[in-house]
Length: 152
Image (tube, rainbow, N blue to C red; front, side, top):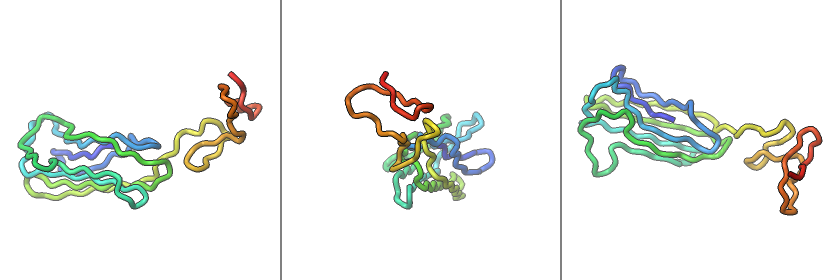
């Protein structure tokens, strides 16, 4: 998931295309269009809530750091964990070097992992087979046609 500030258009956006059931890799991105960018006075913040509880907060520059300029597109990276079906709210804020303040927001439901078999049901945060996995220490694989665990 990217928080993107486009230096040509002055737009701040949140790209949620790369989210996963258990979280997302995060990037604070500058679309510089090949230019060296002055960062004097620039500040950015990204916060993420899951089911109304703050789970991630990023402030740039970090405490006791001053940015001057950059020829880099990625200012910071991180990872934010969540669980499938949680309601995620993402808020971004950016102050440009000329003092403009921009905001962007996104919200979504964290996706579930792919359903492994048509007969499996989502229960307690995981896909569950209609028949409990044998607990005899053996190795088994699921046979969807016979709806049973088969020794491997």
